[in-house]
Length: 526
Image (cartoon, rainbow, N blue to C red; front, side, top):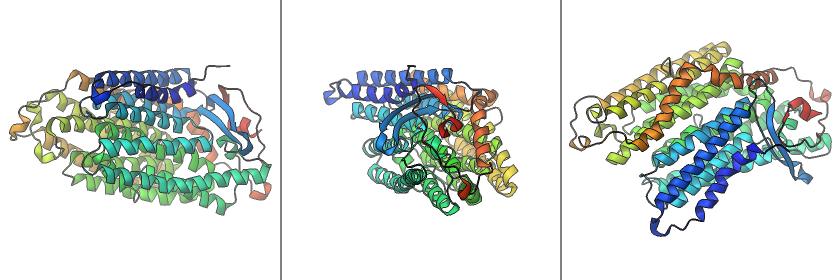
């Protein structure tokens, strides 16, 4: 039996979180030890995600390192994990950002440090589980389970209106999740009607042929859940509140990874499970995405709060990703996945910088700053790189993802791509204007004159995002190549000629496969 690397990657942060609970920490007397152990655990998990990447065959479109064990056989539910080029970098991204989030909270979180670290590591386990699940029942458990840690991270360690923001976050997400659960159960029932046995196996369910009406309703149920998570206009209203009220670590993970679950869900589940309905609905979803691009940029432009500005910029940037997905071509899909990584790096870096300034001044109001280059030149230099990354400066990571997404969108719908391209201009306006007001001009506020530049710990948190912003902009093919075979197969599936319902071949239940082997959709159907 091959070593279960994926299972270890999923559950290592959870086991580490439980280990933290065993450390006595009355009145915070061991906060330092708890922080060091939590950081160490997160670094081990990141090393595991790198090991997954190292073991991954970038030339194959198959799911690799597959682990499958019967869980509830009577209902066809398995513990089923696997990874392909679409999910590979998202797993690494989750492992990469979690240590940075813990470093950002080193001094910002002083109460209940053990519990804070526990929830952050538990959240990481849920995020990785979402990206690796190949059983819809297992996926749904991870999808809902990761809501609980984020709810507490916002509700306990957030700012003044934290409870309101936490409740709004969980209500919005749960509303969409319930409809998705109904659709998941419906798929299992239809599979049972065709074969005599329930199944939640994603690779089997890919082979189901549904009548157009059923496919459309199921697609809408899945798409709504993912659109809320993205969030897609007009389901975005929970995001600014959650970002503004969350602690810095919560904002980094929320923007960097959690939002990507929505776009990942569209790519992995909604579009390939219901391809005809997806292509039928794509122009409408793409239109909402373009509205979100322009709307998010315009609203960001008038924000007086740096954190809220970055939150609305996320609404705009995530719209670019959704547009690439709706294009349903290779350029659009690759651009969307690459932009998911870019957004996690650049927006995560922006939230880190805003958190550093907030820790020093206890305010995020743009008007309270100005002239910081005179007292914090190193921070301003880092701020500039991350800002240029966010607006898609050629040579940095944001340019590649936006270029591919817009190119894919143009090949599909030139009108939507043309309007979406204005978001690039608007993002430069609001980001550079904010950067200029915060960092340039005279140093008029006496409270800013005593601010100190970046500390070694802050460099350790911010530096990796700067390095990746440059590396991903200079050598994008290093990241694009492993996802290419999986994206090609996905696009072929979306545009394949499918038989009519009456001609559909019933789906048979595959025999159990040994752990840690590659499994193609064709093999799963036999």
